[in-house]
Amino acid sequence: MKKLITLTFIILSLSAYTEENIIMSTDGAFTTLQVASPDIDKYRQTLLDNPSAFQATGATAAGICVTNSGHDYLGQMMVWSAFPNVAAALSGSTMYDPQKAPKRFERLREVKYGVTWKPITPFRLEPGYERVQRIKVSDENMQAFTSAINNLEKAIQDAGHPNFYNGAFVLIGGGDRDVGTVIVRSIVRDANAMGILFDDFFEGNASWADEYQAVSALGEVVSDNMEICEQLYFGS
Image 1 (cartoon, helix red, strand yellow):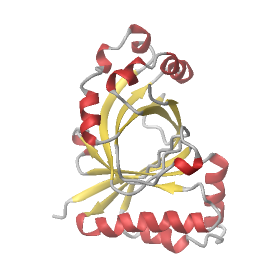
Image 2: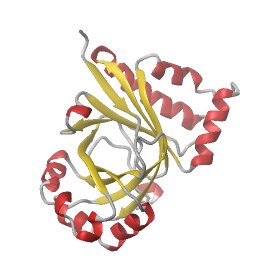
Image 3: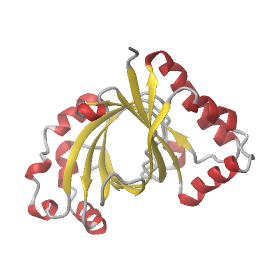
């Protein structure tokens, strides 16, 4: 039986950098904490006002992604932290225990699980409006799939959408739910920009339709949602 790898579409962007300093790279790693919050706005502000957790882990940047549609549960969101490499990410995850967080955090979120991400395709950090999909891809299709992801990004950019980005990540230590899983995000600046891409495709005006179909032919989508992401911490 063929071993299946799941891929989730991700593009993370960190607005901390100027246009000329943002680099497309497979370097670095991320830790993520999936949570449910009864008051997302208040939790966001608490993270802004109390960066000690990010500082304790040695993160170079951090932020949140709030699920906008396709929720698995109410208040679904993710707290992410960026690191220069996997070693730093895994070490950082041992320096902060979310179960021992101060009471002001405990009241504002229920921890679901955590996982580390490692990029396997070049990506650009600049948070925005992001389509997140999980796709099952066989081992034999993996190389073609990652190439197709990069080709789709270039085709959409060449069609007049320079702020569109794709990126794929393997997941490390995510429990049974993430065995054989990779993350890929498709990111634009805002919901309107994402909607324009959908309109172009459904109206038959997408010059990148062949590249999109090439991606679709290489895997099976098993989940699909939209998230709104932003950077809250810019390093100490």
